[in-house]
Amino acid sequence: MLFNLSAVNAQRSGAVFFPLQNQTVGGSDLRDITDTIMPLSFIPASEGGLGCFTGIYSSPDSGYVTGNNQYGDLEKAQFFALSQMGYADSGSLQSVLVKFSYKTQNAYPENVVVKIYSADTSGNIPANVIATSESVNLSSINTDGGYTQFIFTTPVTVSDSFFASVQLPVSTGDTLVILSTQDNCVGNSGWSWELWNDFTWHTISDSWVLNLDLAIFPVISFPDISGVNEIDNNTLQLFPNPADDLCTLFLPGFNSDHFSISIFDQSRKLINQQVTPYSSSSIKLNCSELEAGIYIIQAQSFRQIATAKLIVLRQ
Image (cartoon, rainbow, N blue to C red; front, side, top):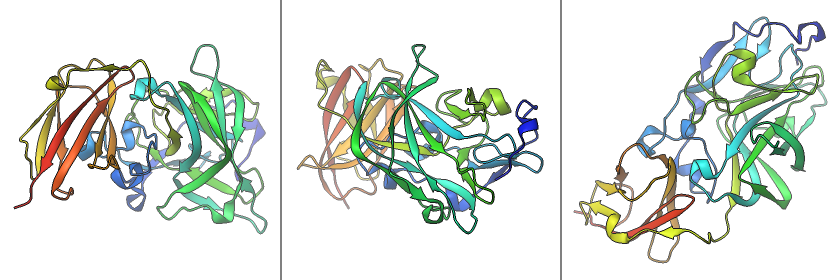
């Protein structure tokens, strides 16, 4: 780990982006885990996301932007605003999946944990630690393209706004770096944060002048939503229907910035789920990987929900 107290207040600049091809974040493979919360930046463009390039930022002088560096950063965190992302405004957090891109370790590597922070009264600065995960030893952390899971033995009730933060190792020889998106490819600006060695929080965009998201993905179970306005299903239409390869979902009745699209089979088993920005009144759905049969398509925002039946035929 690089650490230099004299450099704490120095200008943070000169970091270079190194794309990592083997670290591409999968879309449907990860989000088949029900309610895995993912910024739009990591969702492939083919599934309604931004499909950002991913990698790491590093500098020969100061170390890693999203990991250990000479400034002695203690934690790296990602902010989440559930209702703004198209979910209910509270839920039960089970675990956090993190994608790491690089590590080094000494003979006695440290344990690493993820912390969940509440937001302060302004809603966008980490306030109090409300839960800490079970520890994972640095030697067990995956940096080969897979996910490392941090489990909470007791489910954590989270409100609409919260932070998921990785506590970095501090021992000499231990280094850990979180995968990030490329600069200016984000779901929402200023949602990645870092805890300096003087225990003050700062956005990475303020510290490094880099606007990026971190590959930190909470797994949350949401209760049945009450008070949701069910839109007339005649306003949720699919064409063509039956479909084979692609079909278009029309959502003229929705008025949310983001909403989730879920595909269920006839037994109500979740087949796929994605969070999508509401940039138009229609969305392309890829039906090519669905088996022939009848499916339920559900569009849901924080206050609205609608369903439609889709028939998939195979030639």
